[in-house]
Length: 186
Image (cartoon, rainbow, N blue to C red; front, top):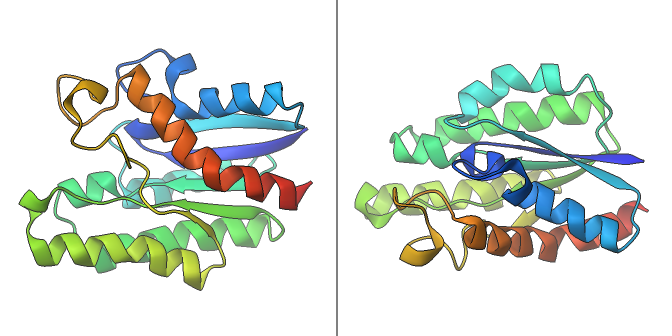
């Protein structure tokens, strides 16, 4: 059995939902239905920033990691943390994973911030995920919330966290990239 570590924030954790409704659990169902030898580990923590993730990753790397899915940055964006700082923290996380598990396949989940954060901030923020994916030979999910972000009936009352239906779309967005990674890995 190989491990897929989903390392993220409330979007990964499935905030406000049962753990079985979060996208890592939905991806595990897909993996099981295909008979693939992978175990999805949900290491999502609500409110997590890239700085928090940088401090938390070592503890999670105690278990073997074959595929690493990085989903952090949204909370940085909502707090207006400079994109260069977010990028530096995410790179530090990637470096720690590569150092401990040099053969692990890496996947980056791209994120965007609402236009209300300002046009130049939003565009600076958006590109860091693609840059990191390119610089680290990572597969890229261009925008995790594609088809869900800003769609009222796919988000909980807070307008930020996906409903169970929204999480199904997140799972599909990730699966479109992850399925190829798993085929390369096996």
